[in-house]
Length: 172
Image (cartoon, rainbow, N blue to C red; front, side):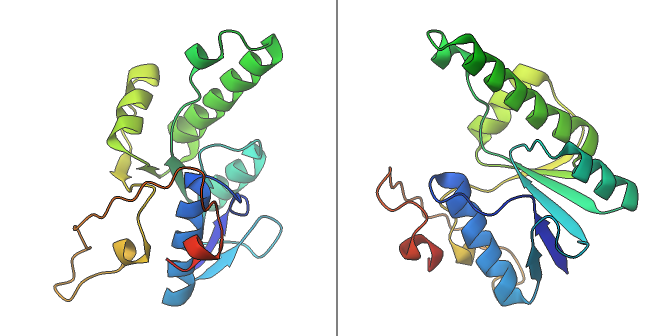
């Protein structure tokens, strides 16, 4: 399967670690990972939101499945003292996340149940297939066990700002 990520993994933070681990798993499985302007994908994976809405609309019209991972909403309350352009940027980012989920995504992967509940509280529930996969999920999370079920033994590791998206996280 050809899977397109809308951008390369960020060097820092949970979304970058998640995407790196997920891409590594998919490559080992034999899937081809692409980014925009490469070959046409079978599936497009969006981490949070993107300004590249036209590409997602093009994919949707061509029947490419779109999966969106939502890690969290940008919280307006945390930015009360921020300049107006920051507040506008935050609102646009949240709107793009909502727009993709509401109109373009075929499935949503939440970073946590907290993120799912926050999103539903803010924007309401959208009837779409969804699942929760936590940030710290290592490569074994995605692999099936002998009984053909996904591993449901969770190991939660919290590393705050220490390793970023380094060889350590890429080889997890």
